[in-house]
Image 1 (cartoon, helix red, strand yellow):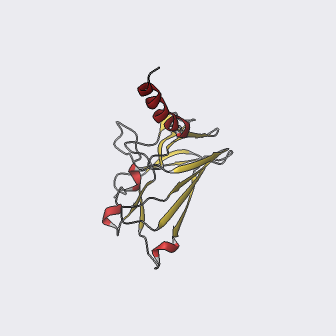
Image 2 (spheres, one colour):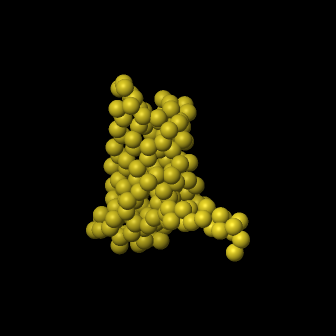
Image 3 (tube, one colour):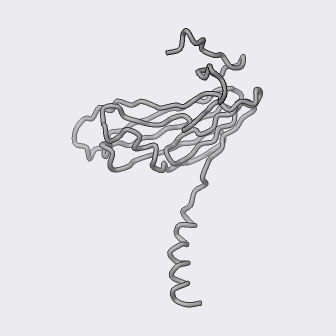
Length: 170
């Protein structure tokens, strides 16, 4: 083996050791979630009983801050650190740039074992290095829908899918 080959392997080894799975799955008897740690989004929300995929395009939980122009879609492209447990996933982001240098964001996605719902709790912390109070205007971009259906605004519930009538949707 030449020195050059050893160097390539040595440079590649830390990447292999630090690699995290591409997607994390949470599942119970009703729902199956597929979460991408890049952007911290739920990319797939599958209702098992009806065999319906409830997400489309970029999925759910696209974290944004409306009053910080540089922060729009900033977090949707960056990796979140995470800890997974049984039916829970804690995502954590602290990124420089995007106008949110002094914010720590945590979101806990829970899929209770006996329920057909997903709970997401957010915690935003203004870091001491900010040396000032900061107000963040959070909003979340979600893409839901069923391809080929005219009515694509719906809400999963215990009784199946409830569609929003076209005359009531905005």
